[in-house]
Image (cartoon, rainbow, N blue to C red; front, side, top):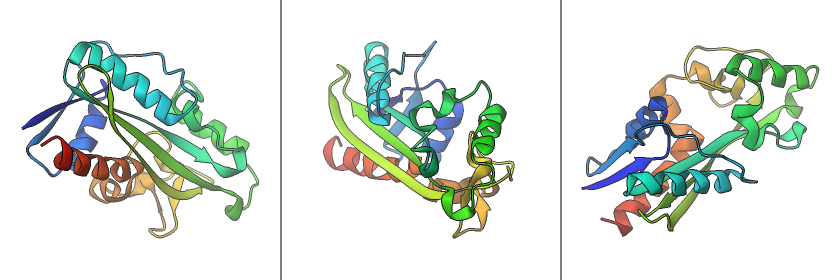
Length: 193
């Protein structure tokens, strides 16, 4: 059995990771106590590494961190690494983004969710990195009650739904986090076990 600390205090992220992980020999848990490192990197991967190294200082186990966000093509990739800091609340972030995109035709509303993951050892040395993405469009209004963040405005053509209209099981099959985590778990199984 291998224990991996996730560099977050967000219980929702742990639930999502545990729902995607199918290997009972890999046990994920969140970091204990206050955890709020200064995410001052220039990329998602930089920020994931900052979090992973910080977590390793106290957890003294393997640590997995991710950083993710919404990248809108017509906004030159914004909000990007600032997705969670774009405004004070999720509702205000969505409102700001929709206002910035007001009047843009559907074809000019392409976007992706990106998730960069970094796994470090107990000393903070990088063991493996993965990046997952999912591509869609920014809807013109929020729809759906599931998910969090920008999910209510992230429209998936192939489902004719926003991410927030998908159930948890559907989302965990296709999300950017799942697309980074599955190959990460495979690497862990093949290399650390």
